Length: 271
Image (cartoon, rainbow, N blue to C red; front, side):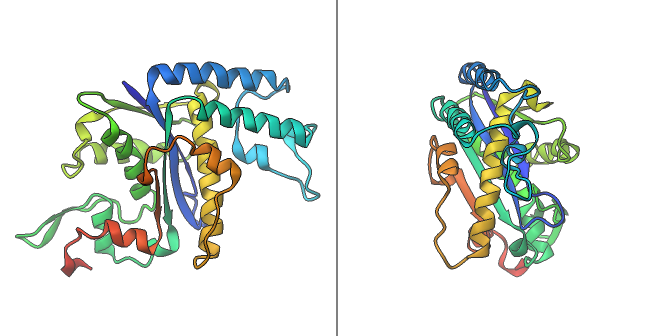
């Protein structure tokens, strides 16, 4: 049995990119990971700190000082804490999956192209759509990539169970999108897609790790889209967070070039 913990960043209306990211691995690896992650949080010895939230950790006041639970932390303590979390991720066999969709490029697509990319089924003989996918939901395409990748990597009859954050806005859509993906006959690995559940981050360290990864992927996408013609290096934190990447498909960046690749099978008269 495999487990995948997935989080999102950038599903709000003004986001420049929509990111789905997380980690997947065997249940025994996750149990060992969870024990160590919880110990790191506990050893921080900070009243009220029960889980890691990337936005809270990196948030600063106008004068550049740490705020909230971390307001009394020195840079040395914060650095050591983050290094410990990243080591916890890197030293267990949990594998990253990240898909980033550049919203401005998504909006340039035709409705038919968006239907095709979000699970719509087209009858070539009748030349009409049988199902219409979710063309107005930017998060469906990256969601599908992050759900499918762990299932494609599993072997034989091994199934993947997925966990999302119960407290996130996205939970209202995840169940419907998961059902669409699991019932899509074009998804060859759908039989290896198991159960979908929702937990709170405090009870699921895997979601906290996914939150860290989604945050870093979103920051990277911001830099990359602001300077599309320049090579952008990943931050040291981001590099450490994807240390266990399995292959080049781990990081799917859907800018115009990336969208052209996934649109290759779309009927030409629909483009």
